[in-house]
Length: 375
Ligand SMILES: [Zn+2]
Image 1 (cartoon, rainbow, N blue to C red):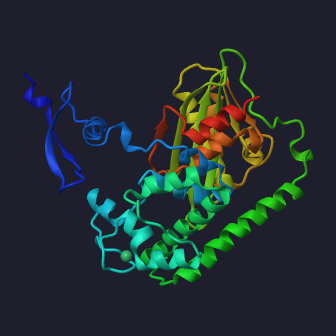
Image 2 (cartoon, rainbow, N blue to C red):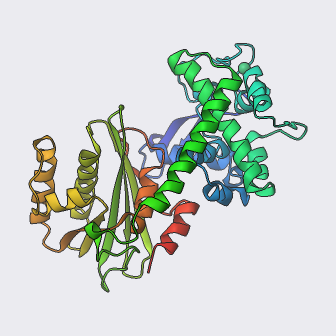
């Protein structure tokens, strides 16, 4: 017999029909979104819903901008906010394709069936074989797994371009031809390649500024912990995302976190906010010996009292300093960017504003970096 108080109604999305209400039970009688989602997930999707493929690794190995990679990852996770998906989540949006207004906007239509998509493929001079294209995400993973880096890059650039053109139409009401969109995205890719090629030549191998600071992540002393933090700041939107990763003295990953804020006015403020969040997290851990590492030399020096600070971020700096005062077993150190890549990768993960996302295991690409960046 199940206690009546423990029976809860959960709205369950259904692939084949409209949402429906099913009965779920909870041991303690409290409704939990997580439990409701797990129930739905196990019942309707199961773990096999994410296709197993070597294509996942290829995403992160392609020589393309990070924003292209994040887009591909979301595509393969069937996680792009196409209208049919938003509608399924209860968002009040029209369901028709914004580009042609003829078909329902779902993943396959957007990228492979819509007139606009076909004009992009045509402009890129790529022949699109849709014979076996039933699931767009599976199709792309297969392409990534079976084609050369150069061909995969072309395919990915077209897909990114289609999404770019679609978003220009939806958010800015700009109508662009497939040819124009592909010109923009090809230039975007080329500019990124040029910038990265220059960086290799221009950045000296030994900067006096950071001489003596390790390039690789180093394990903390036995029994101690290390918390790396990094922030990414979006100019114009004033949004910053923070990535944090906690590891033990054997270099083993313990937990990762991402969160986003809207009030960050510049990069320094974003980095300072990240450090504040890292110190706040440490404060809740108890008496652990933790070294917090950030790759913002300015923020670290200012918080540690080595430099004066700007008034604009003064309240955040003060908060960080007061946290350090009550945490005598916690240190804040500078670390080079090359040794802070896991936190950097987490900061780049998609994250809703003001939402804390906790990782109990790292995404595959960051897991590899986690092992690689260690000494
Ligand atoms: Zn369409």
